[in-house]
Image (cartoon, rainbow, N blue to C red):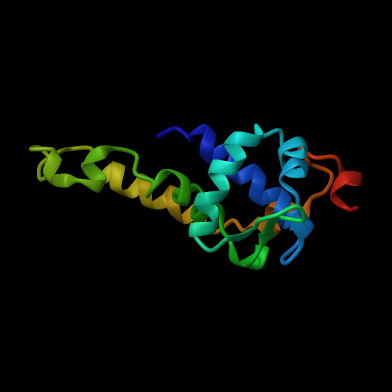
Length: 147
């Protein structure tokens, strides 16, 4: 399993919005610039985030994006799976019928357990936690976030 560029950008977008806070309108260009996301790509990503009820898209000259849930309630797992679907380390985990050896495969159970552990770990990380350490901001500058 490899994280897609869309998932990476969605995480950056959500981290930026989480820094700004729930209910704060942020214009598209600000997110694109500060999170280093190409504008057209951002426009596609936010559609998925809005369908998942994580953000609201406001149209018009004073439009932008608004985080509609508390960062404490949004997990890294949720955003990743919005973008790539359920995390599974092997196709046989999600579709056992696709593999004729699933019933007796020596590693099938390992893939299941590893997938579950990864999902559990990512499900335990909230966007509030990701924003807690302002000394470690890989993309954003602190003065920009706090304005």
